[in-house]
Length: 401
Image (cartoon, rainbow, N blue to C red):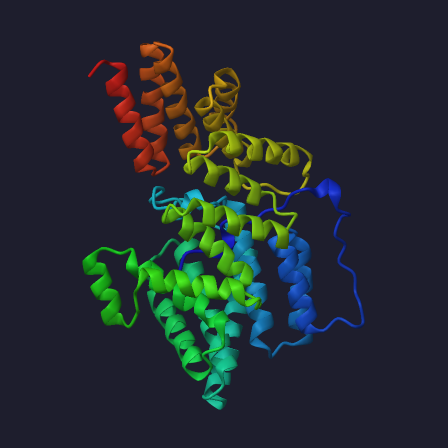
C-alpha cells in the first residue's frame, strides 16, 4: 500500500498561529488524545503528536487503536525525515526512491515495531473473541495496512509486505460485509483495487489469484466515498486522492482535494507545494508560480523541521514554472539554487534538465549539452528514468542529432 498519509506531510503559516504546547488535562480521554495527536501530526507537529499518543497508549494500553495511531505517526515521521513525502515519489518515475534512502533512527524504528505488533496482537484477540464485530475486523485490517506500508516504504521490500497487505484487504472486505455503512473500511479496499488496476496483466492476474479485487473506477469511487464520509480517515482518503487524481491527470479534482486538505490542516505548508506542482503538471505555470511563491515565503519563516532538500524542491518547481511563463532570469536563478546544497540527486538532475532547455532556447549548445550530461548522471544516481530520458534527448538536440 502506498503511503498515502505521507504524501504531503508538513506544516505552514506558523506566523499566523500560536506555538502548540502539549499540556496535561485531567479531562483527556484516549479518544480525545488520539484525535488531537493525529491532527497535530497532519500539521507536522510530530513531536507534540507523539507525546499525546504515548499518553493515549498509557491510558488505554489494551486498545489497539491507541497503539495503531502512535505507530502510524512514528512511521510518517520516518518518511518525513527521509524526504519521501511528495507526490513525485509515488507517480512511478522514481523507481528506487524509497529503498535507497537512509535507514531510520533505531529508537524510532524500535518503537514503531513495538506498537504496530501490539496493535495487531490486540486486534487479533478482538476478532477471535468477537468474530462478528465490524470494529474488531476494522482494527485488525487498519493495523495490518500500516505494517504493509512500513515494509514497502521504509524497508523497501515490496513483496515482503504482500502478506500483510492481503490480510488488510481481506479484513476490511469483511468489515464491509458485516456493516456496509462503514465507509472508513473502503479506504484500504479502494486503494488496493486501484493499485491492482494499474498493474501489468500478469501481475493483475497474480493479484486476483491471491485474493485482491480490481477495478480502477470502483477503487477511485471508494476513496471518494471515504473522503466524503466525515469519518476519522477522511484526511487519509483525501491524500490518496491527490495522488490518484494526479496519476489519472484529473488535475482539477486534485486541486480541489488539496484545497479541502488546506481547510482541514491549514498549517501544512507542503499542501501549497503540491498545489503548485499539480498546477504545473496541468500546464498552468502562472498559477503554479503564484502558489509556489506564496509557499516559499512561508517556508522562509517556518522554523520547524524540513524534509531533506526541501527548499531545493520548491525552487525546482517554481523555476520550472517561471521558465515556462518567460521569466527566464528569475527561473534560472531558482533552478541554479536547486542544483546545490542538500538537494536530492533527482531534484538536481531535473533542475539541470530545465537549465539545458533554457540554454538551447538561447542557442548555447555547448552549455545545453553540458547541463544535459550532468543531468543524466544525477538522474541515474537518483533512479529517475524519465529524467534520464529527457537528458539524453536534450544532449542529442544540443549536438544537432
